Length: 386
Ligand SMILES: NC(=O)C1=CN([C@@H]2O[C@H](COP(=O)(O)OP(=O)(O)OC[C@H]3O[C@@H](n4cnc5c(N)ncnc54)[C@H](O)[C@@H]3O)[C@@H](O)[C@H]2O)C=CC1
Ligand SMILES: O=C(O)C(=O)COP(=O)(O)O
Image 1 (cartoon, rainbow, N blue to C red):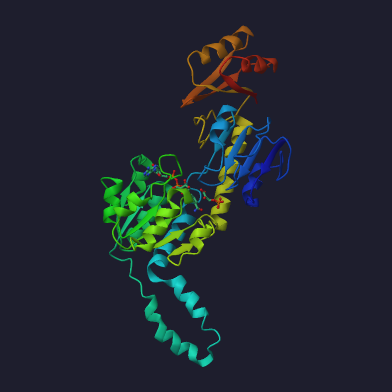
Image 2: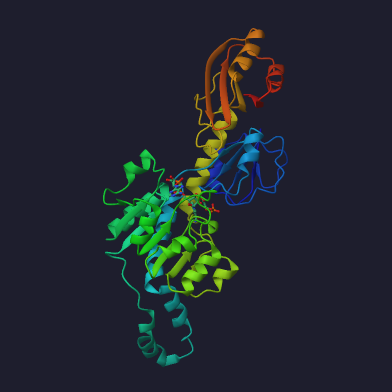
């Protein structure tokens, strides 16, 4: 029986994929795997039993990746599984940032006690809520991954000019991106051209604070900014100054904070980007499949800290070894196996940064003591016999 601990509410349909050999609860002790959404794991003690963490979603800034890598815990996410949900809310927000819909609705509500006068007061007051159309305007998309590409394509279909910036654009994203999107020559070029800017990059040391006073100074006066990625990408003090002096005319963010909630030029949402039944299910299905394939077969698909390694379904004895990416590891591991008279049928080894992963299909019955001996090799982190 495998034990899975959930740290957030995860779609039941998705968890159902795991099947009868899985005990799933939010308070289990010694879990083999954790499935979570935005729960912040940084202060959590990582149990010795833990082999895998699956983020049902895209962003992994809530997970202590370095600590997991050091302990041989493989972390997964679910690329693209919630991208459509976010795209739809971004398109909605483009319109909200332009047309003063939120402000207009809030004002209309104040007329609820005006009786027969309400209709004529509405007509008199509506001129305060005029806002421009998005058709023919330029949208700058920062980060052309799963979400950015979908937003760019949808905005093109709505008649916008689209300019994109992504120095690490993947081949897959390039295949899916509308040919009408123009490539910004630099981040500054995107800032200078755009009437609307939408942010779709992960929160990394290189992206945190990328929207600061320096960036705002390069933007078109009155541009509108949308942030459905992470709060830390936009400097809170600098955005408030940019809103105050009119550099930015509206900021729509999926990350409500006390400062921003008080600002009339900010539309704050309570992190709703991925909150659709479809996306919650897609993410949970993908996360469950990833963790199940890893726990049962040792395969790594869509990891964010270990290399992807896939030897298909196991058929016999399989050993997996998480280790440091240093010379001679394979020699040490295979020498020890050979010394026990065990034959290796198939082997796969891949590395990613400082870490590597080796999968070995072994012939015959294996003495579990081998795992302990391999684990004692300097540089080996975790050995699992499946
Ligand atoms: N509001 C919400 O509910 C949700 C928020 N997100 C956030 O959106 C982010 C993006 O999600 P996806 O598109 O699915 O991820 P993704 O990994 O498919 O795309 C990210 C893109 O950003 C690019 N990038 C990285 N550094 C960059 C830089 N300095 N400048 C420009 N581009 C850069 C990458 O090359 C990649 O193409 C996530 O990391 C997460 O923080 C994701 C899903 C839901
Ligand atoms: O997938 C992401 O990065 C998200 O931000 C979605 O977060 P959530 O799963 O809705 O808590």
